[in-house]
Each structure stands twice: as structure tokens, then as C-alpha cells.
Image (cartoon, helix red, strand yellow):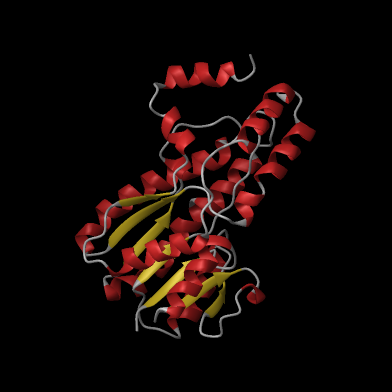
Length: 265
């Protein structure tokens, strides 16, 4: 039986993937914050706070007592914060990088001995925000996902010498709590801003009118199952990327700047 560790498995895309892989014959170790988040009795729930090195080490000790290898590590753990880079406290950036980037670094490093035994695969969940230009008021999350992209590329080029594959997956919009929180994020920004009231009102209105389809998490879970089972996976997979993001990035950086400035005219 193939064995996988999934971080951020308590909700959203991580949970959907854990449940789908379990139903399709995988032994799943699900990194969660609260054990009641997953009800599938076949999934082994592991308390895993990726932002804390000691917690990751404790999780490793527990997992290694139950299996001698991992066929894959799938890094979902992450969160999004929207806000102004000059109005929010710098600690916001520290927190998001500590989870979205350093959490991934910790887990891959500490669990690597189990993965190396099986010549397994690392799947790092990036985002459409990791490959396209930065959008105003989403700089914290965008910066973290661009870091994930470069970290994954460097890791892939190191681990190719050891027979371990590293794959990036870049989801767009899916029906998750993170996606549902976008309007609340804009409302929160409006309540706090001292510089951008008009801009945020207009951008919030535009965000509500986006035409991109929001997919069900099972679609991503099926893609990950495919990536785990094909002999030669691609370096990266894009799934459900927003048309607006693709369109914006046809233009140069300077032209994108002008388009964002035009929002308030």
C-alpha cells in the first residue's frame, strides 16, 4: 500500500485530497490542527503545526513509528491574508511566510528520511498567484507563493540526484473556506484602511464580478492522484487559473501598473 503525508488536511483542498486518496487505496497520514476535522476512519490523523519545528519533529516521530517509508509528501498547509503592505503590521508577512513557506521547508526536511527510502515524490501546492504578477492588497499571499515557486525549483534540482521528484501544483479558485473569505477580507480592509478607501471599494466590486468558474475540490484531488501514479509527471500543473489573471499577464509590468491605476479613474 502506498503511503502519503498530507499537511493542511483538515479542511478544503487538503481534506478533499486526503479523503480521495484514502478511498483509492492509499494509507494517508493527515496533518490536522483538530482531530475532528476528518471523519474517515481509515485516515490516520496527526496533529501537525507546520509553523513550529518541535511540533513537526513530534509528528515525524509518530509517523515513523507507524511506517518505515512515505511515497509522497503533499504540502497544502497555508493561509491567505489580504491587506495593504504599508498599513498592515510587518508581523503579518512574518506569519504567512512562516506557514506557507517555512512550514513546507520544515516538513520536507524533517520527513525526508521516510521519503528517501521509497524514492517518493514531493508535491508542493503553489497558486495561480505564484506565477502571475502581483495584485494590489494581496501582496502577503503572492509573495509567499512566489517563494514557494523558487523553493520548489531549487529543491527539484537538488533532489533529482537522489531520485526524488518535486512537483508544483498551482490551483486557481476552488470552493473552500479560503475562497469564501474573499469578501470578508475586502470588508475588513475597508474598515481599517486610511489610504485606500476608494480603491478598495472599486476593487472589491470588481472581484465580485469575476467570471472565473469556482471548481469543486475533488477536481484537484483527482489531479493529485494522477500525479502520484504517472511515471513521468510534469514539473508543474496549472488548474482552473482565472481568465482575468491570464489576460492581465499578457501585458508588460508597466502596462499592468497603468491598468491598476485606471481602476480609480
